[in-house]
Image 1: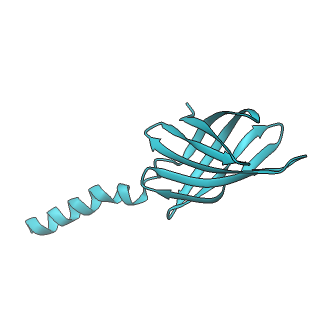
Image 2: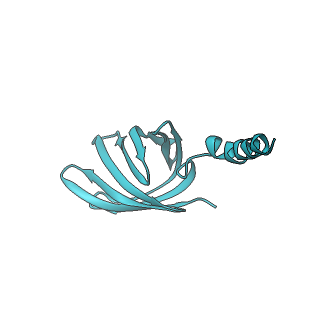
Length: 120
């Protein structure tokens, strides 16, 4: 009987962990300074089975979709493509540390640091 109760308690207590959101899921405030200018965005991210999806809302109806996104532990990797007069794809990589993310963007032979903090 004690074994049955212990097994039930373990199953009940660990169940929320199985359905818990990823540490990356949610809304983030993004900032990057680069040779191409300052970029600020509201970012929505969701992880499902190691695949990262979401988008960068730059305002005025401009949203850049996260492409080829992956999450491995505290490491993120994805690309975003900005279209316009000059189409540019940024290869993004970063590390997550609680409510902060910091990383590097690579595009057109240059790199720039970027950071995000979880939106309040």
